[in-house]
Length: 449
Image (cartoon, rainbow, N blue to C red):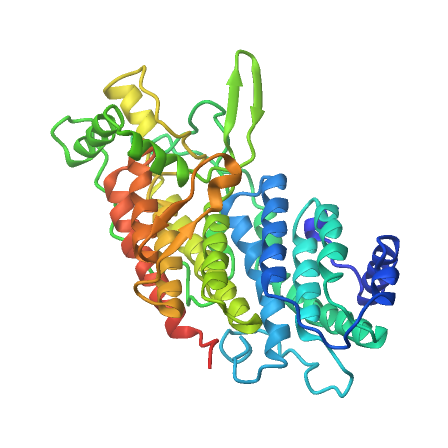
């Protein structure tokens, strides 16, 4: 069975971790420790997030699944820290069926940031394929906690494990396994409906994602957008005018527009084709890009551990619920992609700047989740929070500076037109949908004091 579905017993998990850490020199680290209750910089939390993102990229998870991993890993870290900082609010009592996390009342000495990072790693490790990549990070990052008292260290790991167990149990009931057992997606043969696109002609990705339990919604249809323009091959129709706009814009892109499209590409399915040779280039998901933005912003604002964790978690919730709302509409409207339409009715040689993702067009996923994330980050960090986004530098692209989260989400949205993968209606209605999602998340969840 895949490690993504494996839930080990608490005792076995703890013993395995101790063996693993022992092999990696934890005993030496503890022997050299200097202070009994040190709290290293929140940079360790940011490093943990980056390591989780690298593992998600390595495993080529789809954008919706990636958002699920971010949600549960960050919920585990946050719920651990809340046990110490009572002014912050647990998800228990705010989210239906969310477990009551215990452990903060114990008299045993605990280093809560240490416990939170272990809860984060342990939870994330159960939801990815390449758990060993996270395992390699555990000893390196946790070694930064200089505990002269090994009992504090062990208590902290036990607490982190207990919180992780609770979160993983909650995660196991979100219908994810049920969606793995659904029959293969059946494509509609009606005119104007989505079909797989070049170069890989990949099957539909997560057609049943609307069945996943959300964190805050009453139902996946709660923020159903206006329907897209009706499909019509008539050159005078609104639909073909929007297709024509994609065609015209992409044939006259400026260097800046090309850079914007590539900066926000975030396509984990990118396929290189060289003759008969096909190979994938592993890329960040849209959710991973916004988790990175949340981390960069929190670091810039010099937030403490719990505030940083709250920022990550509220962003993760907006992304997770945003994907559920967006995917609900994608597989309801099943709208055909610009690449298929333009090749059929305008120019059979045309290719978009970006590869078309393997799922229906309407609404634009990046527009929905970027706007939802920007809404919650604006509430947490301010309307005019200026930041430098260095997310794509490790993928060979320069950093970009934004005057606000709203400015960033607007650029992310329009990038889909420049890339040739979305019509304007999907972008504009996607942002409306994302705004509603973000505001709803804020209305339902209170994390900060």
